[in-house]
Image 1 (cartoon, rainbow, N blue to C red):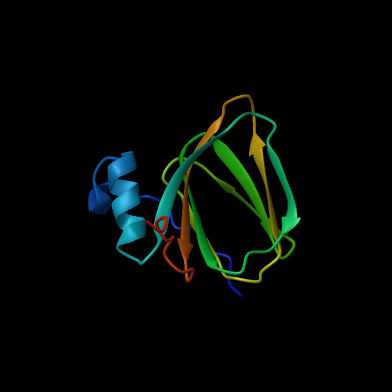
Image 2: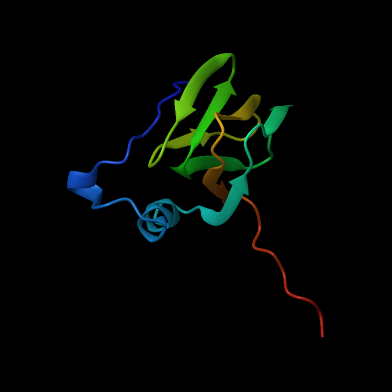
Length: 113
């Protein structure tokens, strides 16, 4: 599996905003949720049963996927296929504002009335 970080291209994508980054992810079929992770946050090695995409709006996020490390900064996106072992850590003193994309899971259902 190739581990490729997609960098935001302002000439192509316009200035980085949460709305633009969200729209880019949603156009690829991801359901997107915004999270803020404080400095020092660490996610130990784990997998997901869905395809994921991690994107960063601000801060720096180190992801280790199948033993390879990448650092995501503002505007960076990384796809993590279902079942692939990975871990993540917020770097530095600044929190990470992240958009977390999920694909391949059923839509949440509303309450029965």
